[in-house]
Image 1 (spheres, helix red, strand yellow):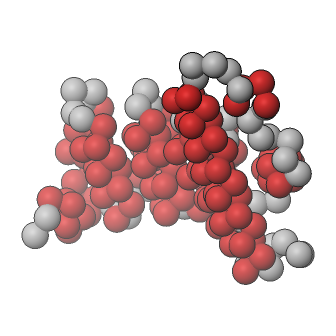
Image 2 (tube, one colour):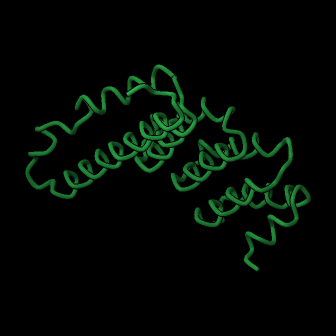
Length: 168
């Protein structure tokens, strides 16, 4: 069995071990990500608070996993953290937040305004940003981020429409 399966099978008794491991900043981000995802299988009242504390971790991979985990643990409580994550500097973290908000059918004003602005083209990279000389990598990165957000926005709207939380 995988380490994830073994830890998950321990349930709440694994919580102290997982807590100590997560607090070890020497662990690579991908290991911390896996530990956070294991915590989604631990049914203990303290799990949500523990995982939510990592939504502001230094590494974006850890923040992304923490957001995914809190949404799985208690989707009703996750909305405020997902809203905050919409402003994260990492596009991957913002994508998780947008998809999560769509999945729960959030009617948060900031989220709905973001979707409106995204689809109205108000959040597109500017022409000046796209025409800088010698900035091909930056331009490609900016365009990629924009289209990742656009794709996440589409997924969010689709989820909301399926849940009948949005009239199209």
